[in-house]
Structure formats: C-alpha cells, structure tokens
Image 1: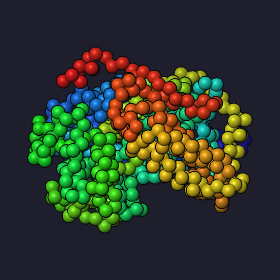
Image 2 (image 1 turned 120 degrees about the vertical axis):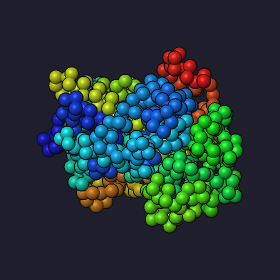
Image 3 (image 1 turned 60 degrees about the vertical axis):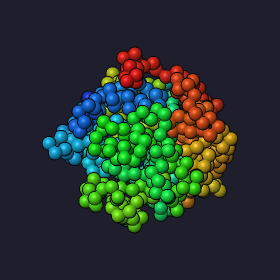
Length: 594
C-alpha cells in the first residue's frame, strides 16, 4: 500500500465521454470533491463518433413535436421493453439539456430565424436532432470538457481502472494503473460513477474504437451489480465496408436523414419490402410518397428511416440473397438527390471520410455500407431517478447503463441520454457521498492480490493476447451477431470458456511502459465476461425483438415482452433470470392508443 499512489474523493467518475463529463460537472457543482478518470486522452471519447445530432423535442422545425411524441417514439423503437420512467424523464428533460449546452458555448446549426436547427433520424416522427453539421458529438465533448476543466476538478488521463473495491456491500473505490508507466494507482471514494461507454470490440466488425472493451459492464458485474438487456446489441445499418482497413467505421444516419436512400446492386430501393407491421400505417408504400415526406411531414415517412434494427436486418437479408454490392454491402446514395454544395455543408465529415479513406466522392456517386456492431442497449440496471445501481455507492450513466433504450436505441437518443442521466448520476452520487462522514475502507490484501494479477501476464506463458482477441471477435461476430441460433450460441459459450482458460497462460513481451499487448491481455478479461453475459442472455430470450434476432424463434413472444433478462455475477459464474418490467401508468399507456 505504501508503494501505491493513492487519491481520495467524494465522487470518482470513471469515463470522460459525454455522460462522465456531465456527471463530473454536476457532482462538482453539488459540492463534492470529484475525480475524473479517462482510459485515453481527455477529449478522445467515443461520444465524438455520435455525428448526426442530439434528440430533443424542442419543436424548432415542427411545432407539433413535444415530449409525449418523443417518449412514444423511444418506447416503440425499443419495442416497449424500455424502462418507461427513464424514457419519460429523457424525453422531458432533453430540451433543457440542449439549451444548457448552448449556454455553455455549443454552436449548433441554426434555422433561418435563428433557432437551433433539427434534422430527421430513423424512428423519430419529427425532425428533432439538434446538430452541428455531422460533428455533433465532437462539439458536445468540446463544450463539456471546457466546462469541466474550468471547475478545477482532478483529471487522470490514460489511466485504466481494473477493479472496483468494496467495503462490505458498498463501493469504496477503484484500483487502476497508468498506461504510460504501468504504475498502480488507488482511488478511494465514497461514490463511483461508471460512464465507460460500450463493448463493441468483442465483435470483429464494429464502429467502436480501441477503448470500447466493455470495461464498465465487467467492473459492475464483478462488483455485484445487476445487469439487464445484455442480449440487445445494436448493429448500426451503415458502416463502411471497403477497403478492409476501414470496415465498420460509422456512416452517420444523418446521410439518410438528409435524403440519402438505400439501394441494392440492382438499383432497387429495397426498404419498401421490409416495412414491419408496427410502422406500416405511417410508412410510405411508394418512392413518390417517401420522397414527398421530406417536403411535408404530414405524409407517410420514408422506409429508409425505419429504426436501426429494422434497417440492419433488411441490409443483411439483401446481402445474403445475393443482391449486395461487390464488397458485401448495399449502396447508400445521396449524390443523386442533393447538390454537391448541400452535401459538403451538411455532411462535411462524411465527405472527407470517404474521400480520404476510400477514395469515394459521395457528391458524385453512392457509398458502400453494411451493418457494424455499434451500441449496447444492455448494461447496468439503474434507478431512473438517480442512476443508482443495485450496489450502494455505485452509479452508472450513458451506454454502460441499461433500461433507457429497451431492445433498440433510436439514433440521436444516445447524446441526450448522456447529458440527461449524466446530470442525474452526478447529483445523486454527490448527495450520497456528502451524506457519509468518512471514506469507506479498502482491503490491503485485496489490493496486493489484484496488483499481482495485473502484472501476471509478464510472468511467462504461451498464449498471444492478439490471437485470443481475434478468436473471440470471430466467434461473437459469426455466432452471436445479427442473426442467432441456440446451437451457434452454445458453440460460442464453449469457445469463451476455452479462451478464458487460455487467458490464464497469456504472455506479453517487452517493457511495461506503453505496452499494448499487456493492456489487451487485461482488457480480455473484461471482454470475455461481457461476451458471456451477452450470449447467456441471448440464449435465455427465446424470441426476436429489436437488436436480438433468432432464426429458431423468428417472431416476438408476448411473454418475453413483459420481462427483462437479468444477469448476475456469482461465485459459481454468471446466473440468468427473468424479472418483470416496471408497469407503465395508464396516462402514458394512452399515448400508444392514438
């Protein structure tokens, strides 16, 4: 203990994306001594990849929009599996959070009369995404980062948390290490907020960058927190497919929101063949009707902007039927519908991304796109009002938290989720921490034991961490991907067990300083636990709903529409149970009768 750098805080925030920064700002403003830990450099958060906009029913483009419509869209997009209270709070508070960002310096695109401009996105009845071109997440991080830094809180960059610590049943801190030096650092804290983002790196094709290894999901499980909806992984319908070096990189939904259309190799706008019954009454049947929707929202909407799970399955079906592009995707065309000036102004990042990475001019021709693992709807079970988990002193916000999005997230809801529940988590964690007179204790024996385990990969073995990671990604992509069956998922579970055994014999070479192989070996423990949780939950849910599609159970099951699948980490491994959804009040149920 004497050799380990130690810091004490009221509130420790793990993760410096949109949720973590907003939580840290609120905790600090509430009066708590706050520490902020980021796995990468400050500002290098996955939030910057949320390009299209932040969803909020401000009514700046269509005055008919309001929180009730946004709530209904969110619930229907999630196939009614959402925590209704989270969805309600999100819809009600998102406009205020957007205005708050503007007050703090965010520069949004404007309407002609000077209000914040809003664009269309899939599953949203009205144009409600406030945006900054197609760089909205970047502007949000810039704004929150500056606001957090000026508060004077302590920020620890390139520090990875390996374990949460507990004093009895409650959280007491975290053990981490500096990525640069390998030196251990102990954070003692009265409350911890997880804002660690997603888990896409367990899949071979993903929009997630190297940080998205499911650390927070794993940390929470190992600390005893309940997890919900882990089976629901969103495969964003439009990721780059060529060249191979950029496969999976996100192509914003803003392309379709601004008029882009999906076509197969024959030039057919195939989405008209995949309109689900839930959206049939409001979705156009012909190309003329769909095109008219962009000029008059009273008409039926274009099927290119159906919820992401529907579009991803449709693209997958077209490719499997042999109607895909030469590189295994479909075409996304905006060049034939919008001027070059319009595209460069509204979608500058996409224009430069395709020109620089693929040599494709999207103002002159179509893009090739295909599904990419993008977002985890499942995560830590939290209280809607406070973002508190089932472990005292532990809070979670953003992608690491479950419940808000149900079985499928609507585009744009992620950014508003971050600031709505980041604020709530920061305030509640600070109030909890300030109510404790002393810091909880930490176990010296546990810290010594964990420190030794962190360094064990240097002791010698025969397994390569990069080989283990590739095998895990391939297994998850092929057997727990967009389309699932029980036999394939059971095969994946066997492979996960084998990989976990082999991880005990992993070997890393070189010095401890900036050793990526060592970092990956430690991340693999988290990824294996997360992959197992996804797979076991997917085996349990014997139906198809949202981001979970099973060939052996192809349709929705009414009984499973009433429950969350809950995963718990026990001494015997991961246990899976079913628990009933919270009951929605009658006044909200009436919104779905319209």
